[in-house]
Image 1: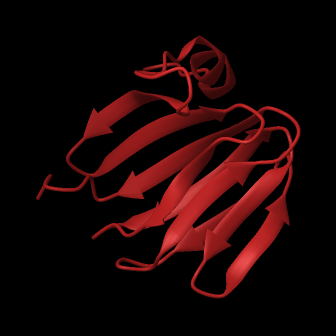
Image 2 (image 1 turned 135 degrees about the vertical axis):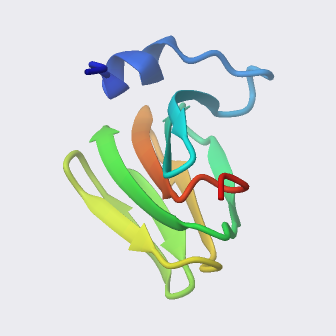
Image 3 (image 1 turned 180 degrees about the vertical axis):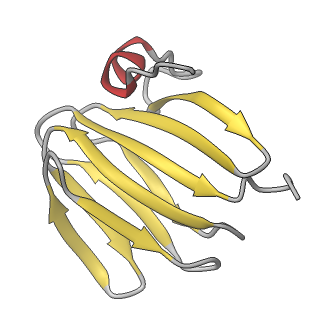
Length: 110
């Protein structure tokens, strides 16, 4: 058994560039990858696609999650799913925005 604490991992994540969101992979296996993101006010993850199913769960804060249908506000406990190849991104507004991304299967994993 592996115990994970996604919000603590998001808080501890280190950004490669202080103007960019911080992220950390907290679990990585062929069937699933778990990634936490910490976006500070004004930061964003530019919309992109994945060959896998992506589930975004908001851990802390309120921000915007974008998809093919536009942008929607999301807060703690909110979840949004994207089918493989669907455009998705997220951005923080005026507060810290932490998310857990579940990506299945892990890209390149199978």
